[in-house]
Amino acid sequence: MSQSSNRSVSLSPPLLLLLLLILSIVIMNTLIVSVSSFTTRTATRTAPRNIINTHRNGNGVKALLSTSTSSLQVSAFGTNSNYHPRSRPSRSTSRNQNQNQRIATEFRTTNDFINTCSRSTTSRLWSGRGSTSTTTTSSSRSTRLYSSNVSEASTNITNDARVDVDVDVDVDVEVETPSSSKASSPSPIASSISSSSSSISTSSNFLDEHQSNPASYQIPPFQKGDDVLTNLPKGQRIVSFGDVHGDILALYKFLQASQLLHPTKSTITNPIWDGGDAILVQCGDILDRGSEELFCLRYLASLARQAPAQGGKVILLHGNHEALNANGLFQYADPKGNEEIEVVFGKDMDGIRSDGSPRWRLQYAGNEPARWAAFEPNGWLSEPMYSHMSVSVIVGKTLFVHAGVTKDHLVKYNGIEGMNTECRDWFTKEYPSDLQNDDGMKFTSVQEVIENANLRARTASQTMPECLGGGIGAASPVWMRDYSSPSDTVPKNPHKAQTMIDDCFDELKKEYDVDVQRMVMGHTPQRHINAALKGKAWRVDVGASRGVLGNTPEVLEIIHEGGENGVDIINILTVDGHRISSAERQTLELPF
Image (cartoon, rainbow, N blue to C red):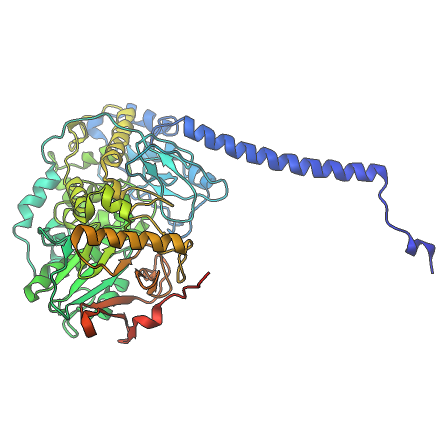
């Protein structure tokens, strides 16, 4: 045997020094990256900038300054065909979409106006009200926000609110507090709604014949007592389903499973209510991720108008995506969804302005003017639809909400009625006079356009009810996930969540003298409808939209006091006609 085989391996001093040097370099690089990340976050917190900045949009400034205001026009579709709401480009890729070029073409002079559906490529932003908080950017992941509200992921704006959105991207931003201004006279949009809603038809044909008319989105006005509906007859049927996200096929399947549509006369384009006195509660997030958002809104609005004739009722709740869109934040909008809104509303929006031209679009600075004008407070759909929707309702022994309600919410927002009233009032709130620029003639420079759009976004986020505000990890009724995440199993902190939901029900008992037994929520996609926290938290978002997970729709059915001793009967309804007992959908509660 060779002697070398028994020797221990040893490193020569030069080799050892080389290895130590390499290890030192690796450690130092790691520290530098960490310090750099921390420094970037600190700088982001201490150096707020405007939502849209002129430096990044410099080419647009030059273009506009060399163009007479009266001849300004808007660009054609600026849609990036590679965009998909589930596949976002990196921050550097987003920057390379080049807002400079975008704004330059946005205000170019042309002989013929081309309907716009242009986007800005930015990071995500969202806001509510509350104490000022700051933003941290993610170096590994980013998202794209089709909004001119922000210029990049590290953009900071000041507002008395936290901002961010509901996917697994860790970016927060601050929004700037606008100067206070007096409200002015109603906008042409509100006037158009007022004059047209009186002639609304309950005919299902109205769905397509008048799709651009705000009255086709009219839902029955809110009535006193609609927040808390507890005086129900035994056997009252209540059905509920979660997020639709712009997918008309998923919505149609939800409604089929709910057994609310006429079995032979209803079609995917012609809904006919056949649910009798049933009560339907849709738990929010009709918007974003899909290409048929307006189609879904019209479909539900038509059913909401038909149902009362049979003693039924349709209740629509706000989700966080309704709140995002109301603030001009369109990072989850599908390109075809933006096109749908432009095609349906664009020409009518142009026609009602003071001079019948598209110059009003300038005030939105290229940030999906038709979409922003449709969903913002006092916008195209505020009076007919959004001012009659709710944040949360109690029906029988069940509380319905998009994400969750806590005792703190009930105390802070003056109960269920308090948060709903504040939200409804906000959607009909008039913008201050300096934001009423419907002829577009006020602007003389790109800087003025940018500043005005910034002010518009900040005004909305400053005045938005706190119950609609929040962001990732926030405790808002439309954002929290304490009861619903992780999916299909017990909440992350089950003991805390159990205490929270128990305390909430105790507060409801004290405030309304009603024995609420369960909370129904959407927001967090599950594989199937399921219950957690001893059957008190029902999670009904099954990710049915093709823009989310494309899962098979399911519906929660509650028969009020339909069992022995006045117990509610709960079932899960499937698209193939099965009725699954609630006992089969309880998550396993471990004793430790």
